[in-house]
Each structure stands twice: as structure tokens, then as C-alpha cells.
Image 1 (cartoon, rainbow, N blue to C red):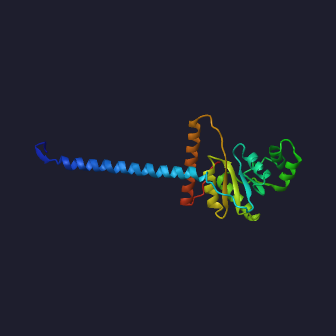
Image 2 (cartoon, rainbow, N blue to C red):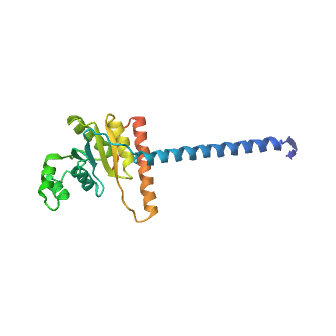
Image 3 (cartoon, rainbow, N blue to C red):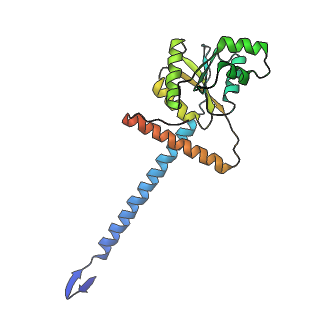
Length: 218
């Protein structure tokens, strides 16, 4: 095709330009497809991380509860009552909460059997402020008390990030996830919560990738 602009003649190869545009669009489509595929795989891995079905060994185990959500403490104590774990360690207790307060939460009817179990086998720490320090403080206690396996109790949406933190800060500990499921008001609420957790999960991955010390809330 010949184009005349200001008395100058230009030869325009339409086929060549068309091929360049087509190739450019192909690259964009392929890149988008790869991005969507990789993101989908990563999201599935994120969701699967907190729902691993592992057969528990006969070795002694500690039940580790991460505070910050409803029913976590009660569920952890019930596991202790059922002798699924040998001790209960609560990580991230509010500094103003006393041992008596914890006892009242876990034993509201003041059962003698529960009191005995609480006094012998429930431990806690108040230093943790986020999931990262939960894993660090829990690991210190686990090493001190010679535990190599834990039943990790936290909310289902919080579990993947918690497991990732424990793998980074307590790499020698075998983890059996124990999810606490919460029924949200709507599907959109569920999606919003999972999306927020997925973003936090990826921020933490970047943190370890670049070895920077950021702080994340539970």
C-alpha cells in the first residue's frame, strides 16, 4: 500500500504490520493464560496447605492453640480431655489475662476433673503479637519440653499462614492441622476473608524471600 503525506511517498506493508499486531496479541494472551494458571495453582496450594490429611503417629504431641479467634481455646482443651495430645500450649495470650481467667474460660462450670487437667497440662505465653511470633515462642517451648509433633489449632482461614510460619520458624516440628470452621454470613464474606488471608500469606512469603523483619497482625 502506498501513502502520500506532504508530497512524500511511503510504502506501507500492511501484512507486516498486521502480523506484528497479531503476534503482540498472542504474546499478551499467552502471558495472561500463564499468569492465571500459575495463580490458580498457587491458590490451590494455599487452600490445601491447611487441609492436609495426615495419619497421627503414636508419639507424644503437644496441642498448640493460636489465640485470636473464637472456639480455638475450647477446642484445644477438648482435645486435651480426649487425650489426643499430652499438653496444651496457648500462644499469644493477652497480657492482661490471668491464669484464673483462662481457667474460667476453659472450665466455666468449675469441674474438679477439668481443674486438675488445667493445672497439670495447660501452659501459655504472653509475648506473641502475631502469627510469626506465635511460631517462634511456641517453638521455644516445644524444644524446652522435648516435643517434636504438634496438633495446631486455629481457624481454617488462618491455618495456611500459620503452617507456613511454623515451617519457617519451627522446621523440625511435625504439624497436624486442626481447623476451626466458622460459618460466615454470606459467601462473599467467606471470599473476602480468604482473599485477605491469601494476600497476607503472600506478603509473608515476600518477607522471608527478602529477609526483612515486618510485623503482621493476626
